[in-house]
Amino acid sequence: MSILTGIMVYLMIFWTVLFMVLPWGNRAPEAQDLGHAGSAPVNPRIAQKFLWTGIISTGIWIIIWLLIQANVIDFYAIASLMAAEDKIK
Image 1 (cartoon, rainbow, N blue to C red):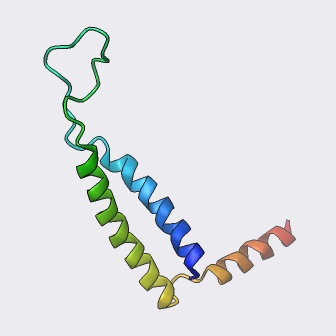
Image 2: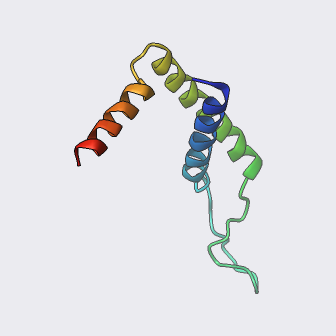
């Protein structure tokens, strides 16, 4: 995996994990303020969520990198199979 591919894979993993982590621990306020959405969290803890997203994303990226290095996942073989399927149709 090239550096550019690794960065792109990490960014895709990061954003996917971020959207899964964002709702963790959110609580709606007991008393709603005028002009605020009733579903807005009291304390969103964004910095903590970005930290956890980075940790989880790095772990997933390392697993994917190891699978690619061990030739369990071969992007070139997958691409050639997809190209062969396109030629058949």
